[in-house]
Image (cartoon, rainbow, N blue to C red; front, side, top):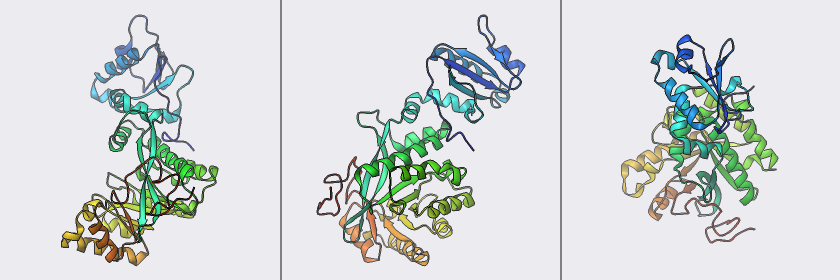
Length: 352
């Protein structure tokens, strides 16, 4: 089995081949000019180009065609030495977006990012794990992770980016963390079409690096409403069948509702920072947080308070039985754990 998220995705080079399908007389007429060789088969047409300006102008010309024709077109731009394959077709709109956001697309395709880690502590402020967050590579081009993932969605690269980000987090954790330290790794459920197949790369990375599956917590992050609950439940089952835990992020905000939490019954429930912010001063927030804690206890989920920036917030959360916390109060995301290769406690007692 293969899909667009797992197939090789090639950067656009100075020379290559533009493939288009389906063929139509109007498309052939629009692109035919003296000196341009257009080749065809039963179901597609293609032409070679010798510079980026040529292929960009071709895409722009196609974009000016009648909407009913252009909206049905799919394209591939391949290196000169590669032929079209079934998995690499994308819509014309996606290809236009790849040109529009060329710099961010190059960051994705060239893997110009790294994984930073933010500490997660228990009620006694002992560091028990880290969440891994996408950041620009050292000396690399600047970007916001939100913007990068939005462009990835627009350009059909979100599965590719999500997979690379997971593997980068796993590899970074192997460099800096010993066995027994939890590693919270984000994933987009919309990027996983078939859990048994799409997660293979993730499991292979953990095995290749001789890491303990029990140390991993895979965390649902989603900026869109989850449309296919059975697939997400299946994703959870596949992770758990491999000995890993699962978490639901941003509970209490956006699409991470308490109803969703109750249906998924995650191992870890991460309360959104919007509820945690000044929760010690807001009785409405306190009631909402208490409700999440009570609901989580029914299925045995461990609750984690996100976005803690003040001691008072931490003290309130701790007083109602929340066992785990994360936020700038304990540490910002960084390329390495605080204090060295691995810092075990808030007092900076480190194991090297």
